[in-house]
Length: 203
Image 1: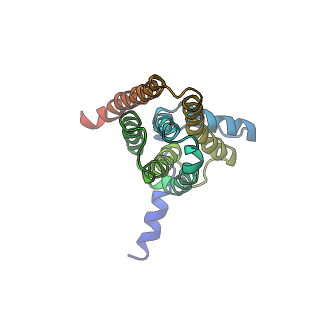
Image 2: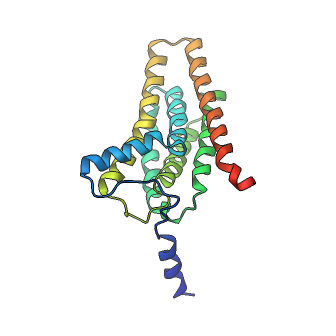
Image 3: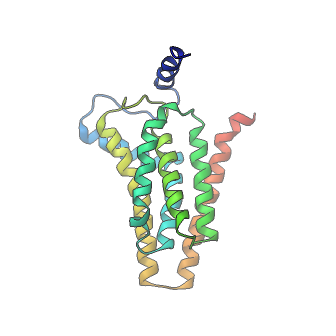
């Protein structure tokens, strides 16, 4: 069994091009970085997992992003190393988390303190595993890694800053309700995309 275990680990770390995000090889560091950012901000399983967290954190407290950022980064670090072990279905798990996060932001915009931090860690973990799924550990160029992580952080920080700043400047009930409606829309979109992701498994 001791001899088989390392072989199983190596097998799990193998690249799986069929399910992985496509990246062009041989490009410069800037092109690699922009490719990574583009994937983080356009792949549904990634961006729809990240945006609801931004609304949740921004509506929670004005400095909510600073409070959860270490947890988000810790989740991303863990996800980077666990991604090669994940099956393609991790994208569905990321969408499911986005659905739950959006529903929470819509129904309870002021959760108790451990909840946003926990969601930040889970979001960083699942979004990163979905980003790097199908690729062996550090198979992608450094620029792609940096772009994916940077883009994921922007996808959370930008809506969090927008929500927090608008609520601080215009503390109106209608504005708070508007952001909660936006969170519910994101949850509904996650549900629709998740249904399409799950359809091949149910047929």
